[in-house]
Image (cartoon, rainbow, N blue to C red; front, side, top):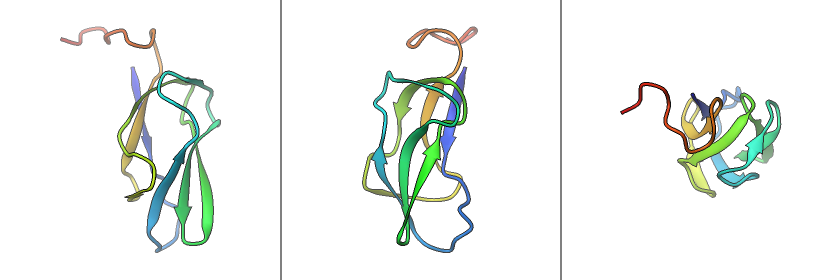
Length: 89
């Protein structure tokens, strides 16, 4: 199963920029572990892993603008990294 990594609503009306991926694709992470840094105005905000898993895919590269709710990557949360999901064709 895949879990989307989304930009949370930070409650600010400022532009948000994804500044740094703290883990590389293929890295195992645990829920709550810092995986992304976002810049919102003068503040740097850490984005935690939404669940345990392996960082499977990065959709937004570093130093790019993002918006609230945008999917920036995916975690593989069940099975083995690189395996097809059951029923996937």
